[in-house]
Every structure is written in structure tokens, then in C-alpha cells.
Amino acid sequence: MKKILLFLFVAFNLSSCDDGDITLESFNFDDGLIQKCPDSKELIFKTSNDELLLINLGETNYNSLFQPIETGSTPRTLTITSTQNQVIYRKYSSTVSQNTVCSIVPVSSPTVTKEWLATGGTISVLTNELTNTDDEVIGHSHNVTFLNVNFSSSDNSFSFTSYNYGNHEILD
Image 1 (cartoon, helix red, strand yellow):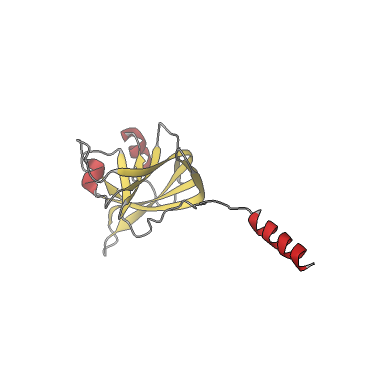
Image 2 (cartoon, helix red, strand yellow):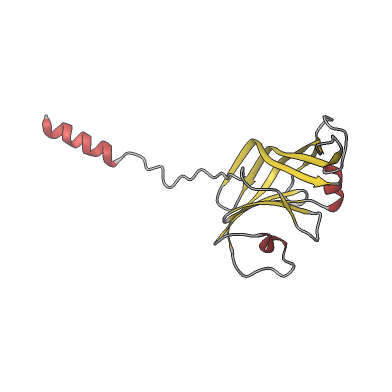
């Protein structure tokens, strides 16, 4: 009987499943500031060490999302596609900087090691006024949120129901 139980135990352990190398993809840019390329209104981005989260808008779409409007109004939205209003997440071989992102001539280092493109979802922007100590309006803070965004790479995908990208502040 012991031999039968030992055989069943060994057979069960040898036939158990291996889930492989499951990796849950995600990112965290909570501490990063939204930056803009100095010579382009089309690109805004956040960096975190060797990671980049980039929004590539046309100038028209940038202006429609980040215009100074009344505080508390309805959020403005744009649909994310793989060719328009792109959202791109990249992982680099080393620390990424504004120069890496905004360079006219592509930099040779760091190199992209992973890339996920948003294949759907919505960019939502809610605008609030920025005031000084005298309650004078000095600019606007645009809170950017991704809604139902799906990221896909050649070998993996992940999604967010809601992801707060952060505040893009524009001073008058």
C-alpha cells in the first residue's frame, strides 16, 4: 500500500502544471512630472529612471485638449489609436532623459528594450485655474487621465480601467 501511495504522490507531483514565466506588466509614474519637448507641442511625456510614458498628439489635438477654459467644465476627451493620439510606453537600457525623447537626431544610447503601444482607450483632460496669492489667474492645470486603455507589445498586453497620468501645468 505504501508503494502505491508513494507512486501516486510522485506521479501527481510530476504531472502538476508549470505556469511558466508569467509577468504582470504595469508601470508607475506617480512621482514624475509631465514634460514637453521645447520645440514641439505634439509630445508630452513622463520619465521614471529607465521608463518613458509618452503621449504623441498632433498640434491641433494638443491645442484642443490643453486650452484654457472655465474651471469645473466637462472633461475634454480624445480617442487613442495606434496612429493618432498615440500613447507609448518604453523601457530603456539605462536612464532616459528629455534629450533622449526630444532629440531631432535619434540618440544611440540608451536603447529601447521593450515597447508597448496603446491600441485603444481615451485620453481625458479636466482643466483648473492656477492662481497666485492675490487670486489672479496665472495659468491652468490640466489633469490627464487614461480611460480603458489597452497596451500591447509583440509578446504581451495589459490594460488599465483608469490611469491618472498627472497634471500638465501651463502658465500664462
